Length: 126
Length: 99
Image (tube, chains in turn purple, red):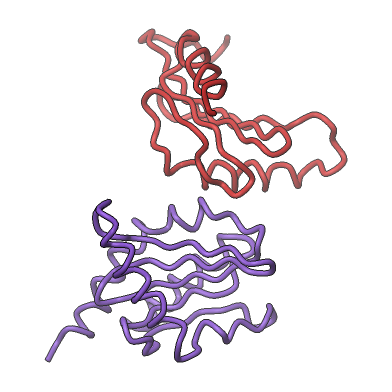
């Protein structure tokens, strides 16, 4: 099953031009699945110990703005863009080039839901 | 600020057979949508137009994509920074292929 999921996410990575990494972690940043273009830029910063917990904190704070639960945070940098989705207990992180199609990444959200359910089960089981 | 954009979209959806219209920026993010169209298609629409533009890289005329599906049509055109997506639906029951 794990191979199927990895294959699926690898397929997604090919579909969006300029996308470097798709990463699924738990809310503490523990990596569960990571697919990347091996020949592309080094984007190991997405696995830095402070990276995911910072998103989790920002997401919790953004949820207090009175606009409902925060779902997605898009961060634009000079060389990268990072799209992080709150799918608790999972965090979905996309890292792409600065000119990557953000709308296309956001449109993947509903497509991946089915596959995430299987991973969620693995995380929540005692 | 986006009044002009809204005006253009309103004009588009009043055209014959048009059911929805959407404008997206270079990042594939929806700038505005009118009628029966899902704003989430902005990203995929922009991606399609970018791929099609690669077929004729030296062309100065913006490419137009037309996707046929049943009695609906999806028109996509990228012009500079902006991509326009229009959904059209033919109301007449009989359509002739010969035309």
